[in-house]
Amino acid sequence: MNYLQLAQEVIAGKVISNEEALAILNSEDNELLQLMDGAFAIRRHYFGKKVKLNMIMNAKSGYCPEDCGYCSQSSRSTAPIEKYPFITKEEILAGAKQAFDNKIGTYCIVASGRGPTRKDVHVVSEAVAEIKEKYGLKVCACLGLLKEEQAQQLKEAGVDRYNHNLNTSERHHSFITTSHTYEDRVNTVEIVKKHGISPCSGAIIGMKETKEDVIHIARALYQVDADSIPVNFLNAIDGTKLEGTKDLNPRYCLKVLALFRYINPTKEIRIAGGREINLGTLQPLGLYAANSIFVGDYLTTTGQEENSDYRMLEDLGFDIELTEKQEEVFC
Image (cartoon, rainbow, N blue to C red; front, top):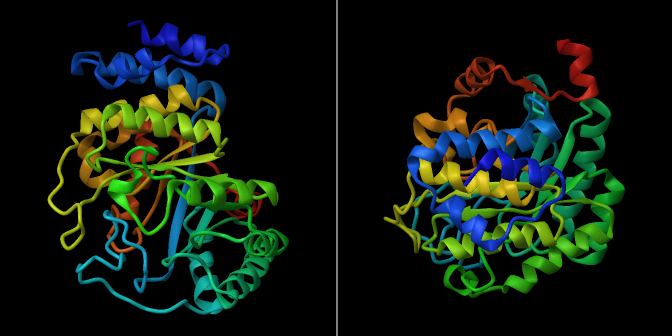
């Protein structure tokens, strides 16, 4: 397959076929650089050499009633993680300052649980109003299944984006969790869009899904029109249902990132959880398809040392996308 030609067709408006999508995932390793060259042509066309940086604040850890097989915070998990209730507004603001100082444009407030309480939404709303005033960061909330009135309150507070991952294909969803449905997840994304909040929704790769499942979730995220698509690669944590699962290698992960770029050419594709252990030394190549990464730690696992990420971006010749207030300070 001529991947660069396919990329130009995608830029011109082509939607790749399932056969072409499967060919990308099944491509020979000796074609990998050609595939990434095509993915980069699409990425460069829409985003140039800019990279968006994101940081997670784990606002509530553990105590989750859901049974998600990948998650160390699940009710079924026996992983020895730190557990604590929803943090204070002051702690959220302290994290926002850290994000601003580290040139991170999107600050992600994440909490475990099926969905937020009234108090949770109130704390986030109060914090977001101050974050926007002091730091001008883009704020993404990730609080679980959302109700209409909660979405409206978050919108009025200034939340820019709401994350709720579809995670996997509809067919494979019940293998991952039974405490909520695939439709529940799609419904939250639709509620977010209805209230004018930018939808962030992504996938976790490596959960014993088929390649057809990967194609399905990439297309499903296209269909729900997610503005930002985090692509996670399973970090199989001991004590979870998926412990010991090791189905990925760095070259396949790059093919997955390329696939998501070909299917979602105009969207922010973020290399998210598990990039360090699954992409390894090939992490820089991932940014030829993706235009966004998390910096720092994740929810219950540690990320790459921050200076390594900044050096990687500098070595690639890519530019960090700053907010207006950050440009005033750093430029």
